[in-house]
Image (cartoon, rainbow, N blue to C red; front, top):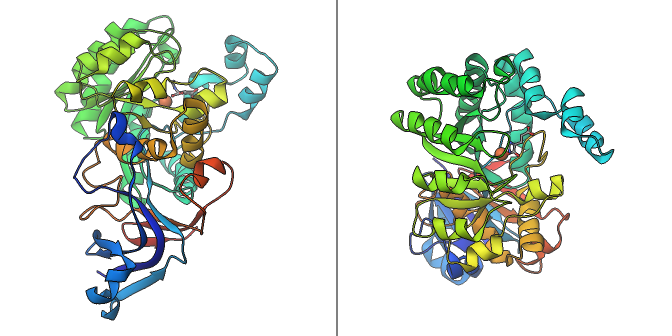
Length: 419
Ligand code: NIG
Ligand code: FE
């Protein structure tokens, strides 16, 4: 395997020296960094980094097999880890966006072809190959914006065959895309059309048919439920999570988006890896998360797009908890997987410092998808997923210049990725 040497880096930020797999409270505001640095990759892992002044003695550049890259005074940052997306879907929903601007009701929007059920109808019409091709366009898009690991959910199938179809597409992305992929089964995203008015029977279907099929084929790492007002109750959620646990699927759940609906409690009671959304989170929820292994995850792009309150990120961190941020990329509530913009929103709308927002979008979001041993920071032995910026004045410039592209070169598993 060829080695890679990156030289003339103005600053490497996001170094993890102490093997910490997650940062909480005040620790979030520190991004360890080295100025005027090099980075060395060997045998598919980050093998060394340090000040340029020490590079000559290392002899890396003398090795005939080494690829030398000049960072030209740009910064190196660990690739974003996006721990919550729905990027396997069949069609965009811009008509719904316009309908919302015109002030149409949810029911009217659904009648005109919006909402999760309409996404399920569209997905039903496509083959696995067609879905895969569409999803890979989005994968390429997010890679070009600096994402090196992504969690992808099912949840636009809403019947057993279509949920399995989605999960097989996710598996194919896992096997073929250069970025790291984690998969989540979200059969309980909405009640499928054939079960309208029969929510309990739909939950039975999820528990008795979908979960065993998904488990037998090992199609999902995690299990999710949309636990919220008008969707699934905490009781439905508990049943589903218990059934998933039998197959080793740890929960990562949608909770407390639309209302204070018990999502955090059920997440904590079932040792969820993360509870995501949290726009309607209360102080009691913050207290409930203390001392647990459940990572609160904010999705500020959703609040931005839906014009809703933002999750209380500042209060979460100030209470000593960890915080992750992710995009929620999906056709309805967040048609964007741009993690740089998510970081800007975390700063502007949730009052996170840039370092806090970057840590939330890298090491903590890696942790919220169970991969922070290998991803989410620049550290010896980790997978070399990183990008080089063009020369920029500071780290703070990145979220500040919230529409300015800053990435000049992207490396995934130590291999340069070309758009
Ligand atoms: O995460 N909150 C639930 N589901 C998605 C929206 C899905 C859709 O509208 O298609 C979300 O925001
Ligand atoms: Fe979501």
